[in-house]
Length: 195
Ligand SMILES: C[S@@+](CC[C@H](N)C(=O)[O-])C[C@H]1O[C@@H](n2cnc3c(N)ncnc32)[C@H](O)[C@@H]1O
Image (cartoon, rainbow, N blue to C red; front, side):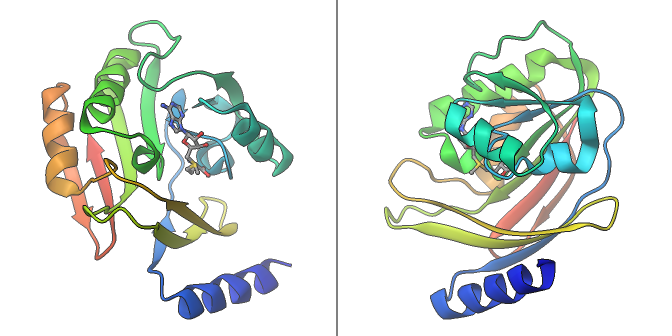
């Protein structure tokens, strides 16, 4: 089944000429909040039951649950999360920031991530690079989990005011009080870590 899905994803990526990314995930230490966690629920699959997955859309939470993602699920907005200050060791955005429209709202999510993280907490971000064009921005993903499991999936968004790149993400993270500890910009996506 996994091989069929991989072949299908590769063919789709080729046919549609949409970019493909290979992401390798490590298990995170401690209690993690995954922001915009629904759909595949990837971080819960990588980090297990110590993950709280927050998503604004109940359908996306149900989809992740039905795909075997075992987070503690919370329905809520990344811009005002229902968690106490300093609750988490790590916060993650796994290809979810691109779904949050406007720079102002993206900044609000970074400020919330800073608030709910412990003072030495780690912010991990995987994000597609989105330009000014209003069309469909799609990315196929090949994800390797810490237990060597693999997920083949694709994410896409349409519309304006979704623009994001490493420079903007760094700027927003700095404004929210984070400092980058490592950043890696690929052709179409970014992996970045902040404290
Ligand atoms: C398609 S998923 C991205 C991948 C997801 N992290 C996964 O593991 O599959 C993006 C998610 O972000 C959620 N989202 C968008 N805006 C949000 C917001 N303001 N607060 C919380 N979740 C949001 C969407 O409902 C959607 O489920």
